[in-house]
Image (cartoon, rainbow, N blue to C red; front, side, top):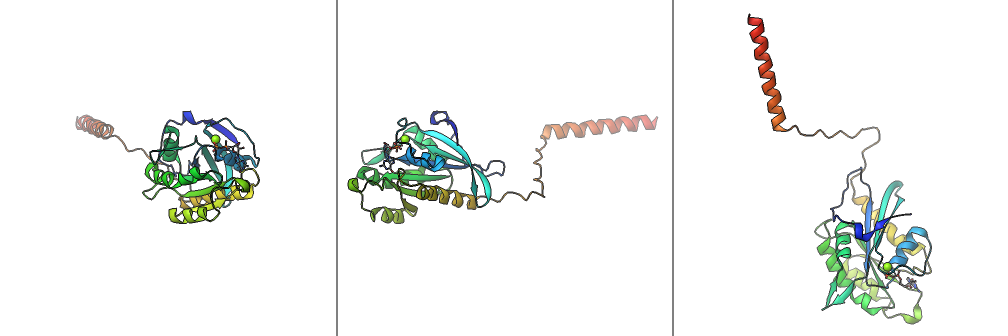
Length: 240
Ligand code: GDP
Ligand code: MG
């Protein structure tokens, strides 16, 4: 795993680039603070659970992964927590920027934190609004984290799948602290979905046609005039 840089250095909110030269899949992980976003990203990328992280670090991680037998460069953007205010989600600039950048979103809440669950529909709306991928928004996976903390549960097990059904996204209940396979499954599903949406790479035997730069009209005009002048000179010489 390679830590590219801190979130603060993501300056451009560029539209996704599906050109074969840029096969990066970009996933943003968003949700309320303390729900386990960083724990999930680290679990997915390293298979390990690390208890404590720098708060709201919002790092960008990159690694090469195999998706349907094809090597793809994956970038995962961890983000600072989103809060609710005046019955709407307040997105820090970093989060808005990440949503514009991302090809897909992992939306996280904690089963121990009712407010983080109530935030989900608001966040989902913002995902569709912020995204530059399509009018319907990017693919989203809803993750209910901290499933291991049964005694602290504040969101019923059936509420997550119901909400995901309403929002039209996939749902996984996971525990970053206890399991790898479900966390991996959720991220992997998104990668597969995105890989399918991409145009296929050109076959190796057929070299990609080199894009010719259009000639500038001025240059073409100059060449024409140069040729005319030359042929006039030749005519002059031969007529002598
Ligand atoms: P973030 O603010 O959303 O990035 O949350 P963190 O990843 O920093 O996690 C917040 C706290 O919850 C940390 O103390 C983690 O160790 C803990 N945590 C994260 N995921 C789990 C989980 O699945 N189970 C339990 N028991 N604790 C978790
Ligand atoms: Mg974090």
